[in-house]
Length: 329
Image (cartoon, rainbow, N blue to C red):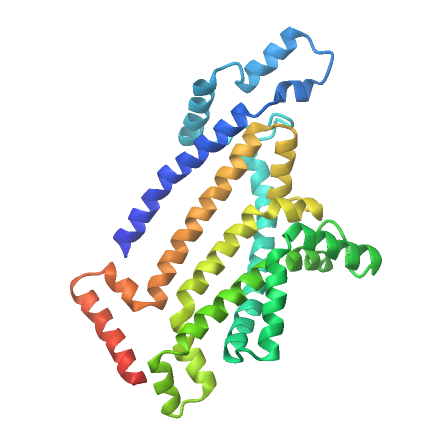
């Protein structure tokens, strides 16, 4: 497992480098001039040249990307914002905890709501409950998150005035952003759990467990759920990364001072260091989350762990798997 972890960790280096090159190339060739955006009208050529030199924009493409990569590797610096002249790392340190908290809370509600609903939907297949949940899940999957956020804001914030519509000043301010951020993930996790659970509960060992007189709750919890966790873990892991990457929508709508709002401000101002720094950080978190999900696979499925072990450890994992099957049979 250690070799596997190191191998996957080293793979993040070319992935991060590829993300950096792609994002930097897009921002470089995007129409617009950040110097003109900052100076406005009425500037002199001398002032323009001085600011372009200060930002390093007087170099060519390869000169700019080379300097950016060198500063990132040698100093661990994302540079400074063109607009505010504040280091990107300082702004990220302030804003990232807000975005992370929003993503974790949303993922928490996705798990505690979507997973039980998916299990209930599978155990009550083709019932009115299952049909209703399926219809609601399809609607939530089809409606974009920003539409749900705007509709919730208008209904609960403007019309009914039950909840705040901007900022995170009180605990009530978290309800709308977290709820609208989690609804789509709940629908996806519920559908995935239902589909996987339906495949598992038709297996022979599930029928054997029921024939032995085990309670239905024990059969579902100890035997069925454990064997359908791999695709569920994939959905949960991807949901957390999507919450971080899609924070720009929710934070912009609800005026939350997080990474998403910071990225939006950078895009509007053509503040290239802000765009590059935030996207690189999000890409790194996505790589870490994918690695964490892969490692969790081995914890829930001994067969996967056995692929990356050898000798006595591999034999022990195989014996554990066989003993588990024997216990069920």
